[in-house]
Length: 438
Image (cartoon, rainbow, N blue to C red; front, side, top):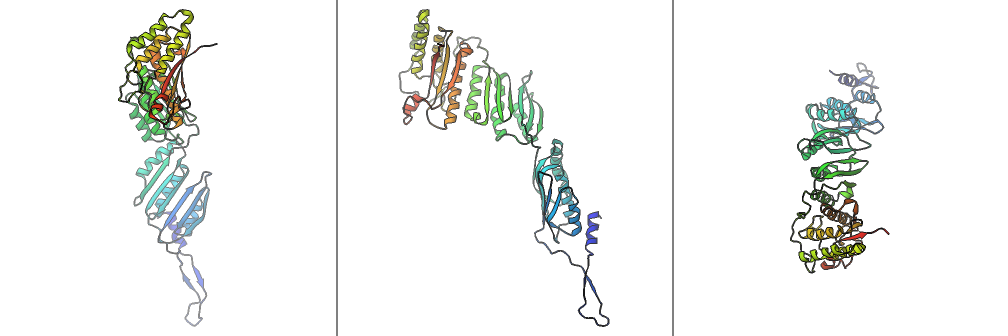
């Protein structure tokens, strides 16, 4: 028999002396009766650990001895705890389990209603987090039903995460994740060769897991680099394996609006293709071109030849004129809502590269513009991603990266009415121009 049970038996012997109604011979001068606590049909008890450490008891205890035992716990406040009969037989074991659990939480709550048990809170340490998860699977008192078990890892003030490419091509994961389940998900997502030094902590950014679901596969498109979270800001840095890989990274960030989740990019120029004369392969689409005369190869070659024939003194003017003419054609088209170049864009970008080769000292601005459909912030991000996609192709064609500036204007500089399909087609454009210093 436990101490608590013995104390309860002693408490039940509390007596009340009642004065006799009659004092006749043979009639007792006093009577001893036991008065139990009132019967409770819906029997429950809860204990909450407050952030300052106070334990607040509420609900019912079967007797005064039990309530007195509870009051001896550090920081206990039993003023809300009432006495009531009808406690389930597992009351002692369940409350002991609940208090032991709360001792390993920085804040949380334990509740017992009949035979139904629930526990929630934030673990003190990582060791507490791991042990409590195991205990809630194996050490719950027999006869209870565990309806809820929500234990979070300890809160981390400065939440960090890193995925770095190692020398073998796999990823080395470090920093924090919310749980072992998330760790296993990320290891599976990262693929073969992944190593993990992750710890468990709560306080992760909103949509932490869903964002990584989109972003972590992008590491496979880098020859070297790292994905890092620190102080709420994400940075993806490194060297893409190719211009197409760089385009895919930028497209994914635009498509899933990761810029709005605090993402930024720091990508080095990919190594030039072994055969730079070969135009990059682009994706095809059935999206219609704007209503204008198609650009044929002969026209592009003729424009480029003008720049080639220009004397040195007029090279900048000729280069500018060629770029203006090519930009006015508005023939650098993309897949709808994305930064993926459509078929035919490589021809005109190639002609621009030929012209830029004739004015090698001039800086170049590649400006992206969109129509007004959709969110303005998303359009701005998309315009930047499309400008960077064109820059990547120009670099692949031999134009020095330090000459090129990708700029996005979103929907802020329309050249036509966005109220018609034709006007929107004109507003979705790439403009390549010279930035010649004075």
